[in-house]
Image (cartoon, rainbow over all chains, first blue to last red; front, side, top):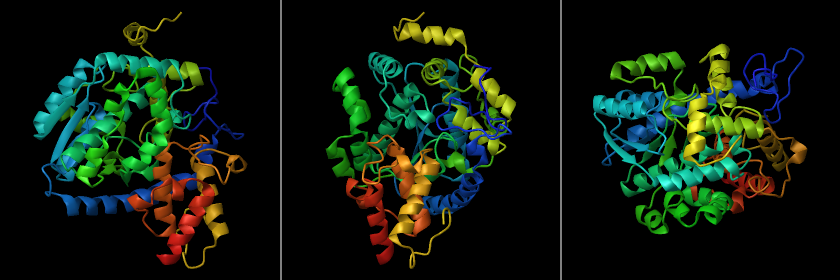
Length: 336
Length: 94
């Protein structure tokens, strides 16, 4: 994997879809200056509009926002921003997918205590989660476009996170759903948007049908919202990714959250700060597609000066064998 | 024309189509000739559901009107040609 040809400016590899290199070894995405310069215009505009949205809605519900809190560094810093910078009353929500690092759970406890926010942890059936991860590891479930920036298992997990957060927001009349994604993990045009569940559900139907055909109707409980709740709530919240508005490096984020008692977990791979299954997810993605699902995100951070190229390479080359083997056993997947 | 706020008074349907094709091609790393104008971008695997959000934001940024929840339907977003009609109709009355 280390011998693979990569862009000399970012870390996108020759196996990344539609990649091309110029005579200096620089990729077509790095060379697309138009794309990069547009980001800052969109971010500036989003910053003002998000502030206005918060100013109008603040204090009108039991909670101003629900925050999808994994315990990792990015969502920890996003929670801090929501409470301290934006002065929002936040309900912190964690999905326990069965593979969260014990250190991450301790971090969640310490941070929510320090910030004085309410916390809900939801743990779907471990049996179901293992079946879901096994299926998305072995078969092609998701749109290839989605898998450019995320592994299949991460996408399975995040789909449940998003659906559960929306369900809670609708039940409790919470106007904002916050998450700690960075640009690169999500495209610039999705920094904030009104969550139109009905429309998105229609577009996701083929994927849900695939999941249901393999895992049964239990899929609905975790991936869908009842029509009665949609009708009863009568509104859609905004999804907002606050971290994308900040010009901050990875090291600066860690410096900001360490004083709250947050610790770096030792039982995760270089691309995660909360989830033990991530090493396995990346391993499967690499085996199937020949590149890391983190290449796009890390390359974006490199272009923005938010991480050094060498550090990004360290992250994607960190593949702890013990965590990969542990997950193969837990998911009961045989391999050579 | 890309990435600039377009003057809604003078833009033609062809300009809208070209602008959308430029955006989809660049943003979703697909060759323009591979985009079937009358087919769903999702069904043909060019975008996923988040791609629809991206296109919605692109419309807001470039054609000076906000796409409402009620307007996010297959009728409006079902293909490039349907999007062109949708944008053309709304920029005219905006």
